[in-house]
Image 1: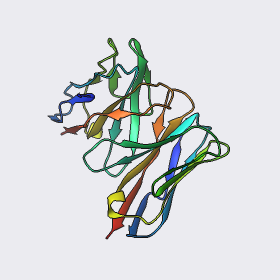
Image 2 (image 1 turned 120 degrees about the vertical axis):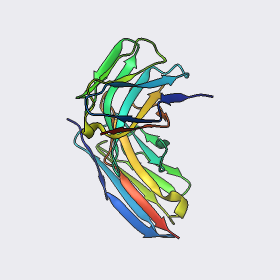
Image 3 (image 1 turned 30 degrees about the vertical axis):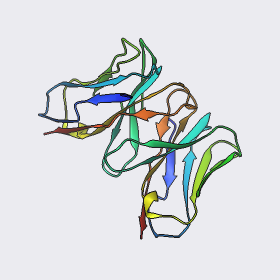
Length: 114
Length: 109
């Protein structure tokens, strides 16, 4: 079972470069979300989606864009990377949208911005 | 803006000790979950609570949801080194669900 797949696992960018973190799930989950985690800290919600065509901002959306054209995919775009975006990024999905369902996580993507 | 504050932020204890971790919200939860995260991995669900006053037990772990659904606690009895990890509460009032600030637990053998 693939579950939630994130790519790439590691990425180094220069300030100002753009990139897309990919996230795909094969569980037919409606709810998908992106988080960033800084050392020793909890996960902060960047953007989330409750279904194809529907996205909304989380706690820390600035500098990030998302789209949800299909149920399976939820890419996260950094338009102009900054050193403050150095972090580990997690994608997650859930069958239920309103918190009762279990979140399933990808393995994480470690991003370094120089 | 909803905030989920956890305390303590960091806890280092000896094997066999008991401990309690707290999660407090500025507003009412519709439901609340507790996750544990180990280094290099994503969080894994421990429990979901949905009813005010609810108590759930999972082996040595006891989870309580406050009557007003604005707070929750996780109690571990006789902690073991395998309990080491980052404990995170997760919840919200709508689809915008957020994680708490986290409690990093280290259990020394």
